[in-house]
Image (tube, rainbow, N blue to C red; front, side):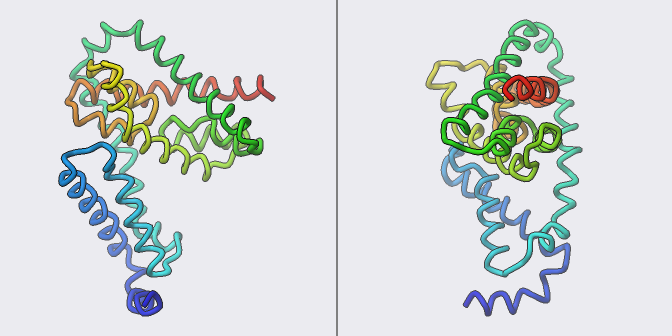
Length: 239
């Protein structure tokens, strides 16, 4: 049956429009499933969409290069989407100014803790040096994480995968964990999502409203800068 499906699909696979439609349809289906689950964070639409799209790619025996040649426009939109986060940030700039001291402390602690814990986890499990270096910048947005990984000697492709997995995990459990800890301030939820899980978790935090979105955007941007500056220094100290 898999061979028959691949044979039917092969004339369509090279078309860029096909893979854009497949990717968007998978995400629309994932959003629908999340709504059916009552908006549960564990039914993360990004995770479900990745699983559905990967299943289609594997079932049709399509190479990743062919898939990406069609879906690369969606990848291009990642940049404008990230820049668009500046809109809620500008609308809530007074709230940001009033929280600067706490933000700086949380940012430094979160960035250092993420880098050190990533390296320590790989060491504890007996992983190699290149895996540890790839793990170090996992909490920042994927383009920055890949550049930092390349700079310190990691594997950018592995770092990208870890960043996406980390973002999905933060989006799935972050809000629930903070709620269990009785932290209900939307500023804290948004900033924690931005620092811990970059864009994926920031999108989940945006469901709380404009204030959470603003602080999530700030977390994504500032954590990217701090991690890019601190990670090389921490790695050189460790090795």
